[in-house]
Image 1 (cartoon, rainbow, N blue to C red):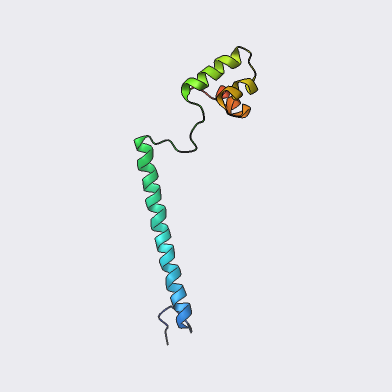
Image 2: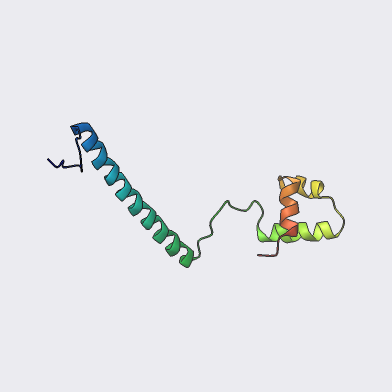
Length: 96
């Protein structure tokens, strides 16, 4: 005798669990597809992903000028309230 859930003997709880798992997998793939589509649409609109920058373009350029003038990263960072590593990355990064 064939079982509704598949071959062999199955109790009502294993049959329900099996159905729930199949449904969850189906929903998971729908979520992944919709998320991927949403990311593509957002990128086309020019949305910037990731953590927001601590310094704006003017501050980054000013930090580059100050570094080129010989000021230390720590002193520059102190004026903006960020770490010296943030200034180091900003000075090294190409202008955006």
